[in-house]
Figure (spheres, rainbow, N blue to C red):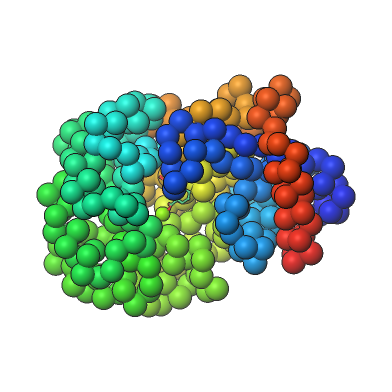
Length: 324
Ligand SMILES: O=C(O)CCC(=O)c1ccccc1C(=O)O
Ligand SMILES: [Mg+2]
């Protein structure tokens, strides 16, 4: 049975989690948690997202808290280190947060930064990972086709596993893919799927080689599984910078996927300076075991958001619930 709005409102906790490293320009992550019959679940669309987008995240939160889990085909998931757009000199300290990860995803093309800074950061990650490490990049759609092509040439020497969302539109991705085909650097789509009306359009446009799927933005584990089933491309399950509760949802999605050949972007609890549980879901020897999260009552109160923030989230919840 799905929860009523009142049930959600009454079990909701709004928290502000400090980050250990600046990510997407923010130093703290606002989230809402609920406790459902299946356990704790998370609703955490970024604050700038509108209700039409946020409603998918609410659908996902309700499914994970109130519906039985999909059958799992693995009990642990290999994860990548996530390196925000930090200065190259800080790379070793960030890498040290991720125990035993053989793969690192490096953010590039951050606004206000230069390609030279990206090159220095990726070089530092290659130095830290050694020749056998797998390095993927994420440009969050920031390059135009010429800039992306130029960046591919400048960064290819670091041996890239793939580049996530180098440009923003499907047409741009398809053109870049054609231009750089000879370089053998696969292109992954993230925002093109997460923000699309029709996630399957990406595969139809032949715009990407790999799909990045995120449980909350795509409306939950069952929609992730449906999309993965309908496309013939490999998928990577990734987080949306969530608390360990949201990571747990992502782990359950990843563990239910029949095929999983790439390491998943679910190691991001390591980027938080405070989490909601005494047993945070952090990479150990490069992987995380699939589990639900027990939220710590004391942490709920010590991380509670200020009253005006809480009121804003309660109103957001009410508006999104009306859109379900
Ligand atoms: O994929 C990862 O390594 C971590 C997740 C991540 O990068 C992310 C987290 C929050 C919002 C956007 C993104 C992104 O992939 O662009
Ligand atoms: Mg991405």
